[in-house]
Image 1: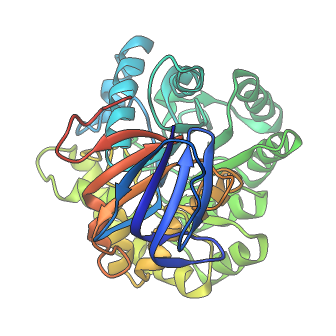
Image 2: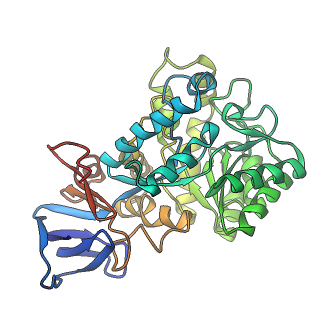
Image 3: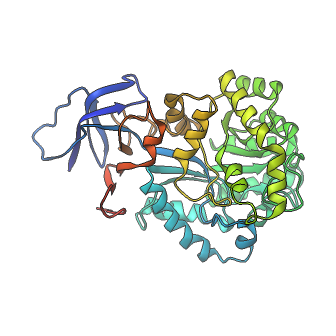
Length: 401
């Protein structure tokens, strides 16, 4: 059955940009038409009056960890869990992402490749969940950041084999650790881990089969190693410098800043381990400065939350966008970072990220105008995925019709 949104503000992210009081016609096959007015034909149509509402492409969280529990020390918990524990949690989290208007996620690290299996179950219709671009297990040096959920490998030969193993398992994106991190005890966040050569070998394997790559980065040298190696996206990037920013512009490297993740750790003193607090306190100011440098220079930015890290529960992408706005990004740029730019980062902009004829009907409807108040994104009125109504405010949060 066809659905039609009427009398609604449309943020298209396409050639028409913003349409005031327009119409969108769609079904499970995709968006059939969009404009000031659209013809429905003779077929029966379900109409939604959008007076006072805005529709935009539903959001994409470009950095999540399905199955990680957002506890004060997630790696400690994960180390003791079975694959089924992680898989069951991922199913619940998928529902939470959808209810928040996030209909696609890029998963950058889960033990047992549980995210790959989850993605397959969603695509087969076994479960209802967001579209998933899955990395499975990250590739790290021996003892490197995130080794609890990762493949440990050293040297070009070993990392190449690890990359091929992940591609064989069905990974859409290869994740690697260029530096130490906050959550892994005993690692210095700024220290170089995988070398430029090792990361280049991983990137080459991904490119051979038209897959993307992502690198966890905190310290400056590790950031530049990853950019020169050819990664698609730089994650976090707490310590950018001018050279790193220029390299990103030159190579078209995306930044996924995850501004919210360290702030959630600092908001919980006495709950998270002290070593995490102390690491974050040393680098959090650099994080904002780096984001502002990248923004001013025109680095392409895709929004992500790092969901699964301490207190970072599914559905906080609107809060991440609010932080980006408070650090100098316009509301329009912030929305684009969580829609069309995020779609470009996973090379899926032909399918999602904008409201255009022929694209998937993944739609988020909110009250008011998020172009004036980004906080409007925190309270969805309707969420559609694949043309199917998943969420309606004040009703069952998982209609699954």
